[in-house]
View 1 (spheres, rainbow, N blue to C red):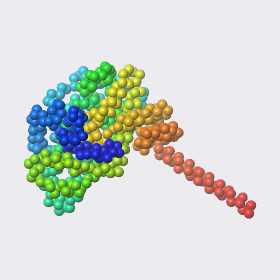
View 2 (view 1 turned 45 degrees about the vertical axis):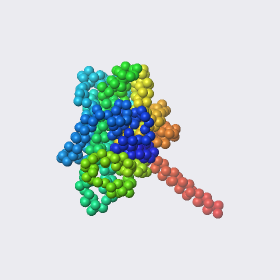
View 3 (view 1 turned 135 degrees about the vertical axis):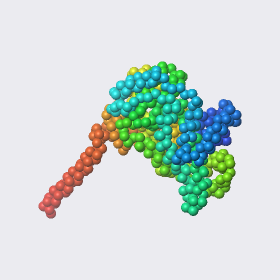
View 4 (view 1 turned 180 degrees about the horizontal axis):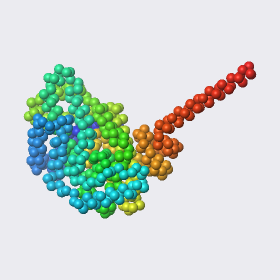
Length: 480
């Protein structure tokens, strides 16, 4: 997987990968991080509760899922893109079980009260006004349904690029001759991608607390969403009362909504970086050509597991490109800036009002640092791990800006993407903060005005130098 500027290390970390973790030579006995489930949401490994081996209790569910996947092949309207989202949604809901209780009126009322209180407190901590037109309480099923459109935008570019690699280098005649086979492989790939996405979303739906848990606006525009059932489970092991935790999480959700609502370019910048990453995916076509020579379409049709076996050999590892590295660094920095700004604003809004706010912030940092389902799902989808070190540095930068420059200049940095600090500024923020303090409010209120002012000053300096040189000539002639 590509993390920041690191290189691709293995097929098991390939976006939409097909690894069998039971065959991982680096896996240690009892290492639950390698098992399927929360820490391996995209894996196909099979094992019992103790890890390793085949769990007979899962056989019925596996056969049901496999039958559903292949019964949908060839049906009109079941797949219109590189990922079969019908399968993804079906498998995600199956993981939640048949009985997901609806949100009670009491839970909805508690969410509304917490959001109202959080918005009042946030008014004094940021210049951005409220960004959500409504606040809702979701079940896990609601989260799957409401966030799927954004997941489509995140997944499609990567899946399309990978799927297109199969035929990109073939001559036109060969593509026409092999069309039936590649059509079948395309459908199977869409089913495989959809199956892995469904497994991940099903696990993620059990864990997420709000619609912006991974720093992205996954839900509909203008909708702040909290998941009361997940919040209750999250609160069970903490010392703070659940009502206090609910208000804190409502403040984080509301802060995210304010930022994305009043920085109109931000959503496109984040999702656009994912698309730029996908466009940079390159494959080793010589390895693909060699694999295709030994590919038997009839064998694949009779035993689809052979496709997984082929892919797990590492034949289709993407090659890291400079364009990908740049896109990933840009995305990582942007997500860190978003998370750091939210941490800073929420701390100012609730710090004196909720005694346990500091402990809650630290709990969420550790949750992110241990690579929970949200982090791992996003890392698998786009090859990015949002490193806690970058988030801490971004939060420190926003804190210093708040203290030294004030709320208006701090929030004014979001006026244009070119005004944001880059990765090097997170490592050494002093010069960036000095530029904010020295530039004045106009630097952020109107960048074009600053440019015009700079050009006018340069023209005046050139004209002044020209007048001085003209004034020197008579004196020189007189001397001569």
